[in-house]
Length: 220
Length: 228
Image (cartoon, rainbow over the protein chains, first blue to last red):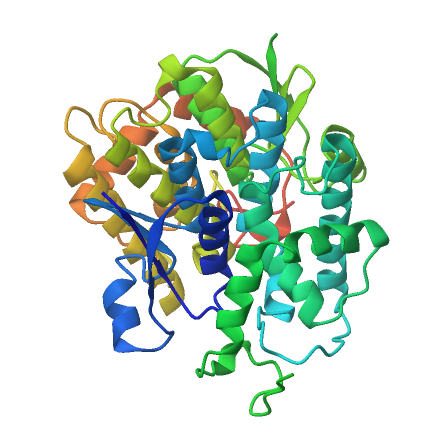
């Protein structure tokens, strides 16, 4: 039985990017079903929780990006979505969960918008604190596990959870440490990343809520 | 190696309740370290245990696990016999979806109805977004109970599992803030609140003396009485 992943706009849907890039980078086959925000298809496909992404595996429907990643890790143990080492895996889950539930100031201040022209956005204090915490976390992981990804040479579920943060740092030209930049470079060199971004910039839809200068829209 | 769980105030710390009650209800032994929150030195004390600066924190040998959901995943792996996640793959995936939805969601409910176990239970006026959260939660519980709850009073049957633990503070909020609850919702709440682990946590909360004004909706009344 093949997997179907229901996602939102590639330009804006940060939650959709997470399982999509995890599956694509790990070579897990799936059918993509894109339903643009604010359309009848979105309402129909998004399920009871009203949200994307949604993973469909036969009769099983899983929502919430982190729950999808846990499901995929079980279904495809050879994909190594979580680190094999117990301590590293516990650490990966902690930072993945911290991302899943946290950093609301950063998320609100710097919405994912891949097609936006790169323009510096000064950080509000709470968003700056989120950036500092994220940089510290990435630096800690890369120092402990050797990089270039958070838990070593392999892109894993924790990296997938932070992939939209990398996009935000780029789009809003967030000032970062060289180590942070090296991590961002490793992530953006992935073919899966480039495929997602190429599709995102080709999308015609505009979503006012995530255009911070609306009704002005800046494109590269 | 014995486990240590670092938690905040039992009256207020909803995140702390989650792994605590999951472990207690499933007889996973641990040592408890309680750090009262928002007092001088609280943050420094928490940062000694975890760079995220948040409770709960599980200490397992050299490992430090933070975030209630990550702690539950860690415990589920370490104590497979506790069956914190349902054995059936479909039920398990559903349990993870609803647990994760709780972990990241229901912000209006969480902000407006902060957990406060000694708050005198009564219905309070609620804004529409809180009522929408409550309705979604009732629907989640009813759906889990109908599809997976045969064989017991909890969301996925006889075992009080990780999903129940994630929603335990929501049970407290429904109760103390008098949120509208159908008969089925009430039955589920009663099952959770009848757990010996729940009573133990609740009794300890009642003994606490730390008052957090911003979590007291009836201020200057606390526990139904004027603050002295």
